[in-house]
Length: 152
Image (cartoon, rainbow, N blue to C red; front, side):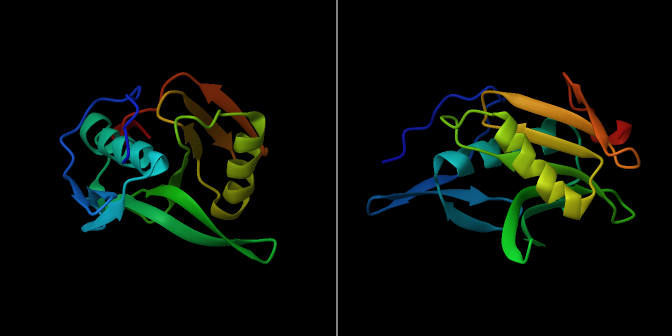
């Protein structure tokens, strides 16, 4: 059975169910129950923090979007758009036991070479890394906070 790790994110009243030995969490955005893995635990918390804490509109958040990178099918965890349909933020979620290392940032950067989002966010639920991208210069600046949606 899944034993949730306390995260460095606000708690939320998730709908968690169990069938046989499998634990599920209800994803409000996709309107379905998902197997509750450690990574999904982080993803669902981060999504709720985006919506409740940072005022991100639910309708502008896309989960597990596909992309093709070097002729391989990949998946980004969360993409956030603005009202004009432009990609604002690429968010990669890892399980709490996975350390956020430079190689994790490089993975997200490769994904962002396709998406061209203005922000890259990495989280394992315990540590959060925020990088504001300068797409014209091909550079980035790490920040200590992620802005609220209205300030993006």
